Length: 69
Image (cartoon, rainbow, N blue to C red; front, side, top):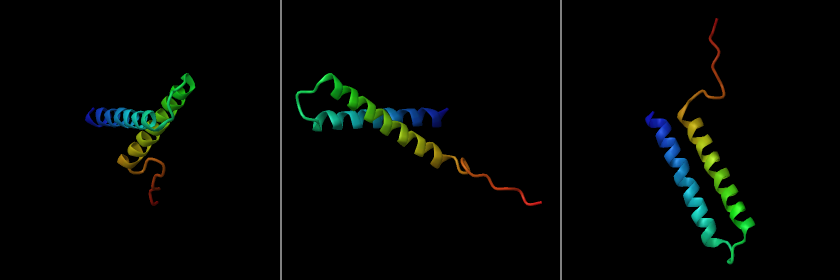
């Protein structure tokens, strides 16, 4: 439960940080399509970070050792 809560909190913080940075550095005035791009990029980055955090915290996620017979 703690792990899931921590992963969710990190994903939300990464999303907010990327969205804030993009809002700061994109040319003003912002159009509706700019907000769509900011949200899409922020979501993508947050999901990539979440994926790598989950992959790093669970060894053997993609590869399993075979048992010797």
